Image 1 (cartoon, helix red, strand yellow):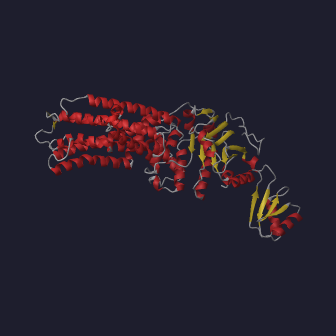
Image 2: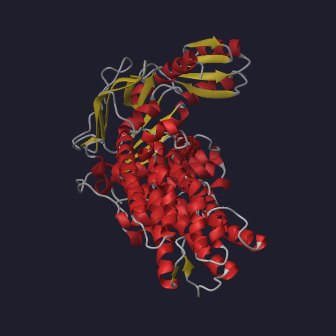
Image 3: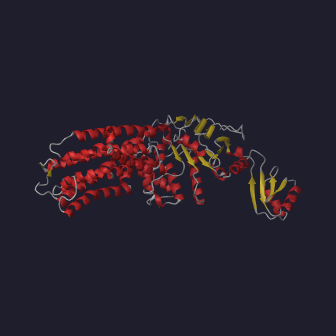
Length: 322
Length: 286
């Protein structure tokens, strides 16, 4: 994966597995005077789960739309599964499932009828296989019981799940999900994560966009960060997350006592607004917590604090006020 | 499935879903839509209302074509077609065309079709067939209910279920029905032109209302233009100019030049509008 300022050396080339599932070179999109996507280079190895991370309006959706030939790039090229898009769209897109800009269905049709209509257009499905494929997809997203109801009456989460069902009609090699957890409750979010994990286990390459770092952390093997249309970081998730010294955030009202106890044990610590930040060089979280509890410090919450991606993303989102 | 099954097998070349399946899915969608069904139901009421009106006034009380209907039942479907063609039939067809591309785009479902993928040319083809289906269904509704109402309510005094032409001659029931069919087919042709124009507008917007406003506004403007004597030279170019030709089917012998020239004009509108739709859809951001 080509990378920007954060990890210029992190190049995750596909390890002997042929062409990358997605290869983007010099991709650019200009609307009037606005540069929505600016010179993005990105390789996504086959089988990876790439999280495209960026605040709202950072160009995630515009980039995805160009990947899928829904929108024409102002400049640059896109290859999916080793073929140029849009030139080879008819060859590639049958193997690509996508949920872009929210689910799109007809309100007056039931969930099942909507899916049948989607299935009718799928080149990989034979006409006889459609009813079965539709039922299986409905079951996979847990909509089998509500399948007979009109789409109009669906909750936001059900609509989103129906969109996922359309993606799952056919075994896909590449799945592109634009903000798939938008509007979902925690259970729905877990469902989406489970489906992404299943796709990953089945060998599919998945591209999932989100403006939530936690989402990407939970599901992705690789990450690309977009800001103002530019790719500012890209690489394997672990490389970006633990690039620098790890630390632990401990929320406690007894921060002074805590810092004294930790320093006495030779562990670096500083106070911060809600408690203390503990350096994890030469120690691990269980030791730190045991030590603090032993010193009589009231520990409310312990959280791994990560430099690199976390901080970078916090700066990004704060800078954009979103 | 294993990773190698999904991930690494070579692609199998360009593929597409069978056209018949796409068309069937489109027709199902178009004809099952509540608003299509309501529109068809209301259109079917037009000949019934005319029939009731004529029976209630008991004799030639109206003007023009309607006076011919009294005691001459098979003129009713033609009168109903002629009256509906002024606004109601174009409205029904435009509604379908507005939903076809602009509506699908607004719902995000056009994206789904393109991602499947269905090629953009095929999308236009499938949508055009869907709009044509509504035109045929609407004309059929008016015609069939017109024939039934004509025969049941108005009846056919002295013409033995045939038709009394404007020229004063009588024709048998067989050729009368043939003439009704000719009027219906001609009307479908005119509506196809309206539908194609509506589809062209529909391909350029994602607001169905814009399509409705543009096409119905256009028809009204055409009507106004055709009443201005200084703009006589414009007449041959206006789609609506030839719409009076439908009454030609009530003449004996049947004059074909009016029907032919208006059909030719509709053909030109249809062709130009379809080319515009294809061009616009090819570059559309979905």
